[in-house]
Image (cartoon, rainbow, N blue to C red; front, side, top):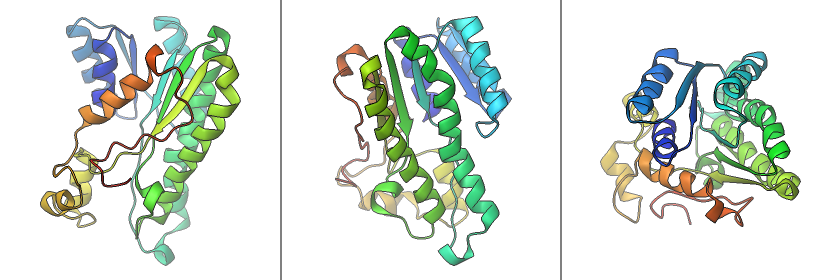
Length: 234
C-alpha cells in the first residue's frame, strides 16, 4: 500500500520521500519514481526510533523542502489468543503502529503549521472498526490511530491542516500473503466471499483514495474514516 501511495503522489507531481525500515526497498522505489520523471528521496528509518525519525525528516527538509503531506503507512500485524499475547508482542505492535504514527506526525506537523496548509492521512485497519479475534493488540493499536486522527483533525483544523484515516480491509498485500502462509488468515477465495463487491482490493485502491484526501479538492474533509473495503465494513 505504501508503495502504491508513493507512486500515485509522484505521478501527480509531488516530491516523495520514501521512508522504510528496509533500506533496499526504499531505494528501489525511489529510483523507480525518479526514472519515471519524479523527484524522490529514500531514507531508512525505524518509526519506533524517535531520533532516527527526526533525523530523517530533517534530511527530507534539506533535500525536498518543508513537509506538506504525510502518509503514515508503516505497520506490523500480530496474531494470538488474548491470554497468550506477551508483553513483548503487545509493546512491539503498539510501538510500530501507534507510537510510530505519533513520532512521524509530531515531527512533520510544525512544517504544516508554518505553511498554513497540510494534508495528513493515517492508515489503520478494519480490525479497529469491527474487532478481530486473536488480534486484540493489533486492533487496539489501529483503534488508537483512528482516535489520534480525530484528535489531530480538531486541533489543527485552524491551521489549514486536514487529518483523515483510511482503514483498509480485503486488500491483497505481501503482509496478507505472509499471514495466509502462516495459517492466520483464510485463503483468497474465502476472504472474497465476505466482500460484497466480490473481489479483493489492491494497493492502488488505497492509493487513489489517499491521493484524493491530499488534494485541495478534499480541503473540507477532515477527521473522517474513509473505508476502502469493497463494502465489507459499512
